[in-house]
Amino acid sequence: MRIFLDTANIEHIRHAARLGVISGVTTNPTLVAREGAGDFKAAILEICSIVPAVSVEALSLDAEGMKQEARKLSSWHENIVVKIPVSEAGLEAISVLSRENIKTNFTLCFSTNQALLGALVGATYVSPFVGRLDDVGHQGMEVVADAVEIFSRYNLPTQVIAASLRHPLHIIAAAKAGAHVATVPYSVLMQMIRHPLTDIGIARFAEDWKKVVKQ
Ligand code: E4P
Image (cartoon, rainbow, N blue to C red):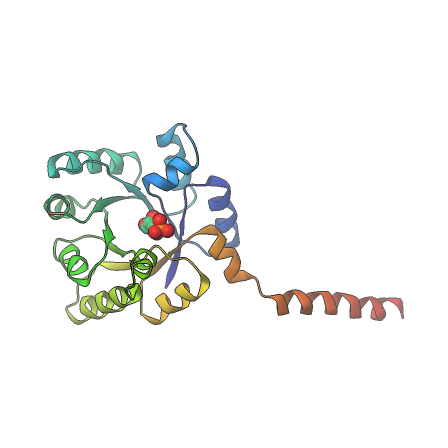
């Protein structure tokens, strides 16, 4: 399973890329807005220079607008993946865009049926939103596991991104469910690295080594 970073924060992306653990970034309008107003295209191009897959959301609600937006966004850089929300218009748009080899991420996916339809129209990725499903009392990870199983059984090349992940146990569950990708908030990535026993162990080794150096 690969890890993408779920953020538009350039410092966080640079840091995670330096660690060598991320192979993509997912953004959405909320994450972009969190970084404040600025040159959106320049920011996306900078992210594209750091990682090989960058999801950017199309905001049109009709199929024609989605297609036009997707063509424009994907012309900015070969690393751009256009996020298209689940809807009839989204399916119509992706079925055309996939034939034009434009990479897409079928987003705001909350059911296995939605994921299956995304794969049938040729989406590059589908993104079940695990945390938001958990929030309303469903087992979000079941959509990830079911989509992975179905895509594998029918040799559908669409990859499943476990999205809307909120804590480190979500990442383990996504990996066990066979997700191709987990898109992870920066804070959760940091939590994945840290363990109090590791900190205690490093401190103790450093202390003990001082005794060796003194001799
Ligand atoms: C994924 O592509 C989305 O940007 C993201 O995972 C949504 O997460 P949230 O439910 O925490 O907003």
